[in-house]
Image (cartoon, rainbow, N blue to C red):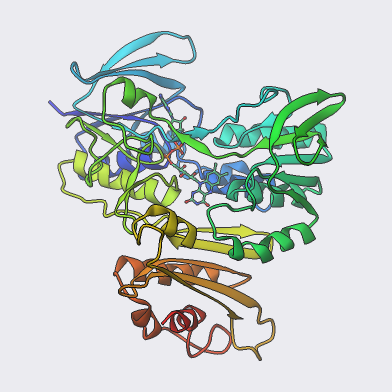
Length: 453
Ligand code: FAD
């Protein structure tokens, strides 16, 4: 008889695995339990639908339930929530959200791809109407319909990370007044401070008020709207509040099943995406990954590693021998006319890690600002590049870029260099491309590397 693979969660990691298993082993019965309404949607695209860049939410659906069933032969069950895993009997308990009934589903192999959920800061008022989080397509639809039906004028965004800033742009595109409140001293807290200065000024020029170092203590009803109460910036009136204060891994099912949890609080997996139980795999935002620079596990929830980790898990569940090599946390964000990007470790993170000298004394860094293309080329704009390296051997540990063009691919030069364990000298001599509309004989990343030398 054919084997049964059960997958919990039908988004990036879960559906990557399901598709891979079906391709490798067409006889296998693959069941995906998804508690929500949608599968395989691009969460990353949601701010652009809300802001009007993308004209329909249907464009964000990479794979519909119908197509997954008919074209890929995946037994997708939406509105089905897995509420328990029994690793001894090898079965899961599933609740049908329609009628509330439950049943047991046995498995030969199980994949946990439950993702992450928005963190809820400990403040009163999070459940008031007009207060939103953004994680699933259903959340995006709620925000969209609120914008359409209520015509709110003022949005307050709690959290100045990348989702908060992408949504600040979306709300400005819809002509709302926008205020961003960030508890830490800077927006984009996973960048070094000097990489964010111009970006923050630019965001403010776009009509967004930013309050950094500001803690929200409550959200209150203030008819007809809402009031966001802060310690440092007084009370901010709002018609819509978006809570974008980060996410937490959905590891509860794994923890209750007695699986090993990692130091970060996410699920521990080996380099084959297998948990501490040989019949259970896990992938995506619910797991921690090996960090190639820190050489220990880290939790950096991104679509990139969710897709790859899901595929590796699927290949191994289908009997293969695929390895997930590790992550650098490479990320790029559009912030109005700017693009910012990061890979590896920031200088702050490298120093704090204790891996490069107790006080971080082996952490070196270089920052340059140069034209992003030949200075005489019309429309050349300043580009800021930072490289972080190990002073002992010159090995590149991290990179950050901020500018208006050419940021996204240049960060990938740095990511590739770190993966190949290159030194700043190696980067300075890479044979990269040049013509005046694009770059310089030494690319700005190489100019930075040569300053670091
Ligand atoms: P999820 O997408 O969280 O999917 C998990 C699924 O499991 C969910 O559908 C959930 O309903 C289901 N589930 C959970 N528990 C159960 C259960 N017990 N039973 C049944 N089903 C369950 N990443 C990038 O790399 N680049 C970007 O530009 C980017 N932009 C983003 C923008 C926004 C607004 C958001 C919210 C995220 C963004 N991300 C981005 C992050 C990216 O969306 C996630 O890393 C990715 O979705 C993770 O995929 P996943 O499959 O691990 O988890």
